[in-house]
Amino acid sequence: MTISALWNTRKQAEYALEKGLAHCAMLSDEVFLTIDDLVSCLEALNQPFGRVCALVLIKARNLGLGCYSLFLDELGQESGALFRPLLECLELLTYFRLEPTRIEEALENRLPSAGNIAKKIKGQIKFMRDYLNTHASHVSLAPEPNSHLINFSEGRIRKVQPFKEKVLYENVLLLLSVLVWIEIEAVNCISIGERKINEALINKVEGLRKRVLALHDQQELIKKNS
Image 1: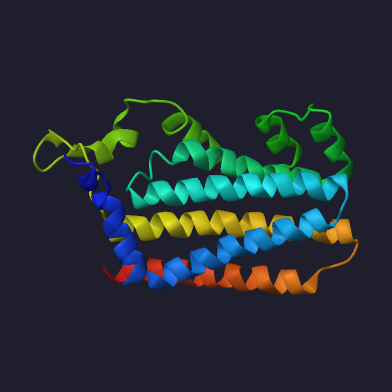
Image 2: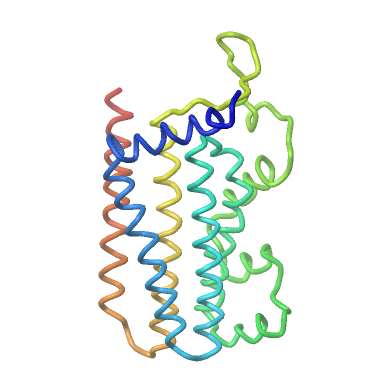
């Protein structure tokens, strides 16, 4: 395989995002740009609470972008190693939002473990974190996390993961759902820092949430009719 062939899957994914999945690509751009705006708003609070939350949000942006990049190479399963800390960013923002004085724990490098943070906020995504811990955070030779590496029709190992538009679409939708959820928490943190409800940001993120949800509903309808 030549070096140029190494990126064939990504090239096909990029083409799909320019054509049939253009609406999904546009929404993805808006979600990431909104994260950038929220980071600026948190930093503008000019206080430890805002700066720490901004750092968490930037980390979430980078992890989300890393997942997106791996999706383009049809490496969705491998992206799980990044997806788990992305979920931790979500729960960390919730942790700070529920009790802003917890920022001191971050400043003094004594934050609880991710598991304890999830318990303190009564997190609702333990099942997802457990799944990622089992199938993505460590190398596993179990059948489920390795099924994409085998061409079952030919009974051979698949060295390169072929592009599948449906898989890319579903992976991106899942990522956008989590990123918008993170944005909601970021807006809540901004409102706490500003000591007022920021209606403009709420409306902006709520608009993104509804658009992502609409794509999910559309996808589910396609599945039922297929």
